[in-house]
Length: 199
Image (cartoon, rainbow, N blue to C red; front, side, top):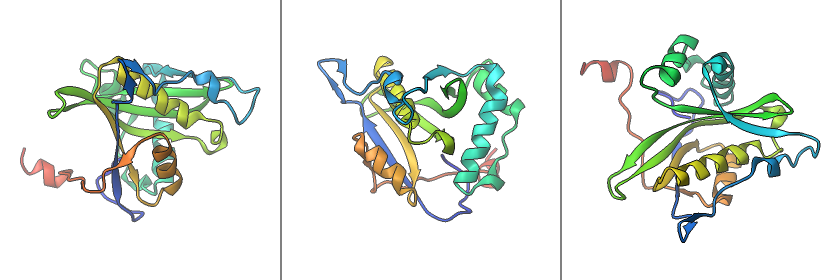
């Protein structure tokens, strides 16, 4: 959900779920994805890790997300670059795919970071997107809670992501799950020429 410039206006808020959302070492933020197909009682939902064969689908989700966030002109990713970044010798991130009735419904891209204060790894959610026709069926919640459970399993101290300040439905949804906005923090970034000048 991060880009190098903002064409649509708005600011980024940092949100954090501190995975002290455990009790006596038992995760309390977890899910069974079958419980979240509430929009259609006949819909079957499942979540799986993406593979190399899914690169074209992941690119479709990335472009749809960019369009929603008014950033289509900023997408420079290619299928080749994505394949190398996600499935090459040194994967930089991981991806989950959600399906409803075997139709692609949403995706999440995430990677591991680290907290020096906690001396623990963290899970950073880069992107989460659900197709409009599949919204209201619990797909986004299932993806997010699937990742929270994964973060617990991996011994992470927290889970973080960003959200645009104009995306109030997303902000309300995240806060309903226990996430809190870190309004005292601002994102700083070197990108493009500002970064390459130090090569």
